[in-house]
Amino acid sequence: MTDSLRRFLFDDLDIRGAFVRMDAVWQKLLIQRSYPDPVIRLLGEMSATALLLADNLKQPSRLSIQSRANGPVSLLVVDCDEARNIRCMARHGKITETPSPVDLLGRGQLAISLERSTLRQPYQSIVPLSGKTLAEVFEHYLKQSEQLVSRLFLAATPTSAAGLFIQKMPDADKRDPDGWTRVEALASTVKRAELLGLSCEELLARLFHEETIRLFDEKPVIHNFPKDWGKVRNMLRTLGREDVYATLNKNGVIVIRDELANHEYRFDKAAIDELFRNIPPTSPTRH
Image (tube, rainbow, N blue to C red; front, side):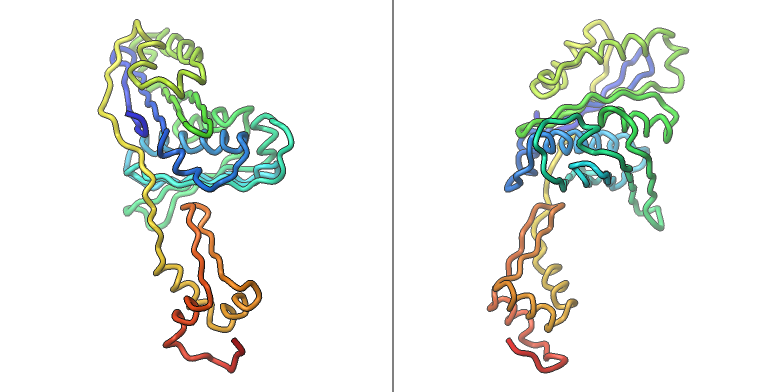
């Protein structure tokens, strides 16, 4: 099953992990988006990481990750909830070559937010973009926030995005002093083609064929954010008749873009007339 996440546990080593891969969902996320391949790679790696981190939380939460930097890729945003319902977006300038992730992002910071019903307000952690790869940035974050050593192996193309996560638990050295060193070394041999082309069972068997691994049930990854016309219409009403008609008269149509959910809302004059049909103007206006 693709478009899924699966946890696993090294029974004898006190090391846990997870593998996520998106195919159809990832392609759906990129529909009508003309991101260059380097941007797709970064956004896909961050999307896979967000799913892995969200699934690793002690309490179910909505996880949002935002990268702001001064490089060609100025903004990356990924949002997913406890049902692994994911959405994402990127903003970028001109990219004339294939620079490293560090050069693409430049200097900046990573904001990681958690929302759940038991929190009065979202919890947010801000960390610098320190590392040569996106995986290193998040490994540094996990070491600081959880005090646990973790490794991430990420890959993304226009058709697939995947991530392998392993984490050393507090009693790992007691169970086997060489266990983490061995597992980390084996995981480090993984190839991009394996991450993007193998199932979880195939990947783990190829990397750790001599280890005892317990696999948990697959969990689907989805992208389900239907258009909300009511919300957009209410927003336009809040802006007011005068401002909305001024924009309509200038452009001939009103286009509202929800970049995160990848939706576009278009309103022609007839739609705007209907929107304000029962709302009297506050002052005389020309239409």
